[in-house]
Structures are given as structure tokens and as C-alpha cells.
Amino acid sequence: MEKRFWGLVVVVGLISGLGAVVLLKVLRFTQHLFWRSEVEGFLAGVIASPPWRRFLVPVLGGALVSLMTLLVGRPLRGHGTAGIIESIWVKAGELSLPRALFRGFISILAVALGAPLGREGALLQTGAASGSALARWLRLPSGQARLLVACGAAAGIASAYNVPIGGALFGLEVLLGSFALELFGPIVVSCVVATLVSRALVADRPSYVIPHYVLTRPRELLLALLLGVLIGAASALYVRVINLLSDRLDEVPRRLQPFLPLAAMSLVGLAAIWLPELLGNGYDAVNSALLGRMSLLLLAILPLAKLLATSACAGAGVPGGLFTPSLFYGALLGGAFGQVAGMLWPGGAPSGAYALLGMGAVLAGTTHASVSAVLLIFEMTADYDLMLPLMLCTVLSAAVSRWLEPESLYTSVLNRRNVRMPPSVPQWLRGEGTRALLKPVQQRIPPSAPFQEVVLLLLEQPPGTDLYVTDQEGRLLGTIVLDSLKGHLPDHTLLDATVAADVMDTQVPVITPDLSLAEVARRCGKTALECLPVVDQERRLLGTVSKTDVLQRGHF
Image 1: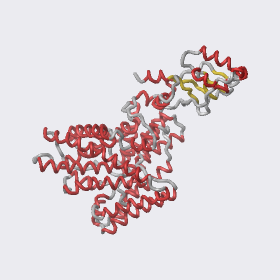
Image 2: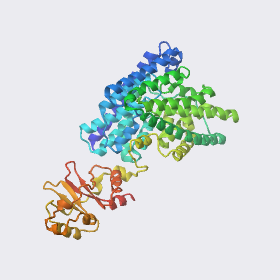
Image 3: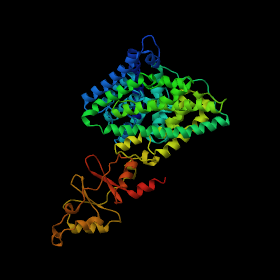
Image 4: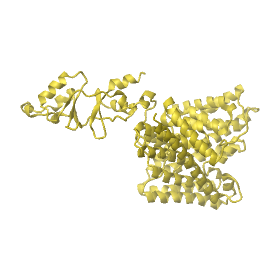
């Protein structure tokens, strides 16, 4: 890659890291302002607050989101990651930086005021949008623009949780769907730079500090496998409930939708009177589960309550991430499993060890990304001795979840938008553009070419070759296909007066040279033609791409 692009990778990492620092400071300041005086810690501050404050502060957060929705005239809903994936794969890396900054700021305020969502949504969106803005400003090719967006998003999550390795793998596995070396380098550089900035200005320690747990005995590995199956089913439930509530809330009349955030946050505030752990992203509750300090009753009740609260707020239009709430869901389910296992089979590992496994298992089950889930949990906790059971648990959870619910937390959102992503796209489709298979057009004809000349030229062409009608500047006007020509034949008495413009097809799909081969393959699959024309932005004909060549490239 050119030196300028590597410089931009570093710049995106710096911007993502600084953006994360600013947003996290806004989060902590707002939490301190509304929830803490002498008390340290968000959850401790919430618990120490009187019931009326637990209710009114989330209501204030919902009112803020509803007001901003009315002002901008469009919902702020969504956790952002699906939109980033859509931008990378479908929109050539296009993201609006002003909208991302505005939405990120509102998201951070909402989470600080008690929204049961994750802070990471704002950080991912800001990093990705900064990469998109730089690519657009410098007019980078679409391939580099897509990669720069992925670098920004991965750097955002790396700086949010102090996880440079996990953030890089998240960007590769979830956003790009590839571990190719040419993608690995830029992603790693951005994540490292962003993490260094975050460590220097915020903190340099694991996100969760837990005792040293070891799960190596055969029965503990067996329990880890069982937990993987159970958490896989719970992950599928997590995805389905979030989608179900989003679909139901989408059916609310449009005039009432701006007020849904206020309604959802009011319900959350009401529930927080009895269950204060529901408020915010749940970091303190997860720590309690990891340390084995939470009762079995709460470990059983809170995951379902958090799932309902998170689904309601996300579907209602409160911006925020779903990554951190899924960690809460998994940690508490794992902790409950550990306590029950300890009752039925005493003498095993503490419940906190299974809470950690539950975090990784839910992360893998909801994203269908086992590799990044393992590395993210390892970096968040710095406990290497749990790697073997964690790997077993996450892989099994992802397999069970995928079997029960084929769509992940992110692809399900895209499907609701009628955006179809390839389920498993090999590197040859991701790394190369259309130019790799571009062939020149040997024969072009003007729109005024007589019908007899058109027929003779078509008969002289190899099978599957079409004629392309262009103007004097080389712009494509239409395509003439031999097999479909008979459907355009006029009355025989008018053949002498018929020209190419009368029989050309203007509806044949075209492709551009910067499209990935994944998109080219998708478009080829929708037509019976052997070749598709390739045009530039001004519709000048550059050549053709053969369906056979696309398919043959897939075998390498």
C-alpha cells in the first residue's frame, strides 16, 4: 500500500483514540453529576440514590433523546455496528461524520443517564465515520475507503476497552470477515495507536479485574461444554428478542415514534426502583458476578430483565451499543450456572469463573465470531489460565446459536433493512476489484448502425458476446444480445429503416471498476448474460467482466 494510506491509518487511530477519551470523560462527568456525590462507582451511586431519582434521571435521558429525534426529524436508533458493516460492504465506506458525532454524543449522555445500552456504540461510530470522512476528503479508492472505515471502528472498540488485539480481530472477523495479511496490518496499526492514546489519557489496566481462576479438571471442562450449549441457546434468544421488539415498535404510527425513547426510558426508570443494576451499561454488575458477590436470585432475574430493557430502548430509538449489554447478559447467566453447578456438584470452581465463560460465550453466540470473542475476553480480564475452557465454550456457543438463529446480532439488522450480506465470502472476492478481471471491448457500434450490420456483427462474435452501443464520447447507451434480438424485431417491411438504437436493451445491469468481486458475483447471479459491461462514473464503456472468469477466480 502507498505511504499516504499508512499515514492515514495512523491518523484514524489517533482520532479514534482521542474521540474515545473525550466521550468517556463526558460519560464519567455526566454520571458523577447525576448519580454520585460522596459515593464512588456508578452502581453504588445509583443504589444510594432515592427511588425518585432512579426514576426521574432515566426519564430525563428519554426526554433528551425524544427531543433530539424531533429536532433532527429522524430516529437515532440502532447500535451502529450494523450500519458500519453496511457501509463497508455496500456503500463503499460512506458514513456521515456530523451525524455520527451528534449521535455518539447523545448516545453517551443517554447511557450516563441510565440507558441500559453500551458506550461502545458511540466510539465505534465516531472512529468509523472519521475514517470515512478522511477517505472522502482525499478521494481514496473505494477499497481503501472501506478498509479505513474498518480501521476506525476497530480502533474505537480497542480504545473503549483497552483491547488492541481483540479490537483488531473484531474488525477483521466481524466487520471485514477476513484474516488476510493485507487487511491485518492496517487494522492492527490503528488499534495500537488508539489504545496507546487511551492508555495515556484514561487508564492502563484490564477492563475487569478478577481473581485468578483455573478450570482444568475434567468435570470443569465438561461443565464448560454444557455451559456453551446453554449460552448458545440463550444467545439465539437474545438476538430474537431484540429483533422482535424492534419489529413491533416499528409498527407504531410514525407520529408517535419520536416519543418512544421517553416511554421506554420511563419503563426502565420504573424497573430501576427495584432493580438498580439495570441502569447503564452494567459494568459494576458484571464485576460483582465475576467476583462471585451476587445472589442467585439476582443472577437469575437480571439477565432477562436486562434483555427486555435493552431491547425496548434499542427498538424505541435510544442510541447505544449492544456489545456491553450482551456481556452483562452472559456474565450473569454464567454466574447463575456456576452457583447451581456448585450446589449440585460441590467442590468445583467458583461461580465467577463461569461468569467469565458466559461473557465470552454470549459474545461469540450473538456475533458468530468465536476468535475475536476469545481474544476480547482474554484482554478484558488478563486471565490466561481460562483460555482452554473459554475456547471450548465460545466455539460451542457460536455453533448452537448459529443453528438456532442463522443471523447474528448485526446481520439480522441488515436483513430487516433488506441488505443481504454474503454468508461466507472468500478473500478473492474481498481483496480484488473489478479491474482484476476487466477485458477490453473489441466491437462497439453507434446508435445509428443499420439493423443488417448489427445482425452480421453479432453472428461473427464468439458465443456469449454481446454488442455495445456507444455515443461519440464512448458512453454506453445500450446492449444488443443475440438471443433476445428476435423479441425486438419490428415488422419485416421496416427492417431497412431499423437501427441499433431501436433494438438495444437499456436495462442491462452495469458495474463499476471499484466494485468488489463479491458485488460483481452478486450482480452476475441476477442475470443470464455471460458478460456485464464495466463503465466509469460518466458511463464511458471501459470493458467487460465475464461471469465465467468470476467463478473461475473463486477456485484459487
